Length: 429
Image 1 (cartoon, rainbow, N blue to C red):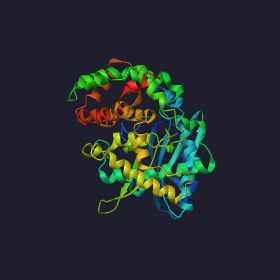
Image 2: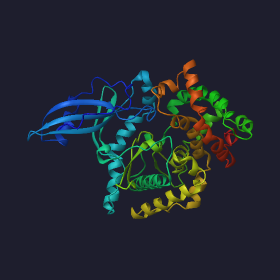
Image 3: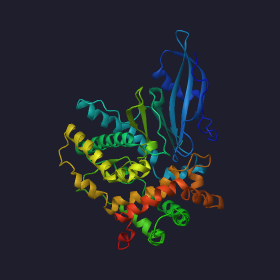
């Protein structure tokens, strides 16, 4: 009996490329379902709602199969491909995100999981990648559908409670530890991994984006209800300050404890499943397009800023660092890391270093306004970067959103008073 009846499409406005047909999945089906006779029905739909991903097309593919014994079976896969150029694909392509993710799934992620297996631990970091393909300048992935194992995304609008934050930080530590040990055993990662969100190749894209978003952001700051708002607005970084901050992220201190950072770690880039009583069971990371060799502070600042629930983000900030550090050291010991283990005080100190603290500002300025805005059919990279009156209204709508304002009235001063938003520190460079 087919299970693909009642399929839900979470983004009916997504245009699905015509070449994604049952024929494309022939090789995967031959390996994954060798006892199938033929495809009865092929149904591609969006995998996620608008506003959850801005750098790729994500589809869930439902395939009804007739089997050798006459029964029918439904298989589902997740398919990921590049955006068309007219929807921002050319800008994403310039960042080299898909070639990097291809390397992660073909080489590094399997190697990281193998390190744990050799140490006696069965730790899954990422979904199984069943097929990769490069054709006509485009890269495509077919993944296992984690939803068949009851994995699901969390609600990005509400933020994560303590249980989800703890599990996510521990999983991040497992990823970081394996990458540090892999680098120790195999040598440096390729030069592709020296850059993340910031790239010398995309200076114009970064500057143009900042020019478009800076003024509506400052206008919105007046409406958040911050005491002494004018002080923060006056201190707001100029375009040159912003680019100097951005460039500082490329300066990696080899004497620090460094890892392969996820680079884009927030609540929509992992999935969870649950026990029958509702307790969180497993958590798996997804989306490895922005990975960068650097300090773990990059991921910690980004993740805590973007993903923690409002009532614990500031209150538990230092505790989050401890939770991560505790698991990191456990994993490094398990994997027999040969260098000195990172100290907790060193990890806290790294959050304040100029090349890392950029990610706190980048998170609140670039990502948090989008994350805290309800799903909308117009939530896409093209509209966010459009130099039109409608684009301007869209950006102002994001940063003046009352839910975002309620977070920022406390969070912006929190980072400012810790020195992370001391933008004058970059002016002498």
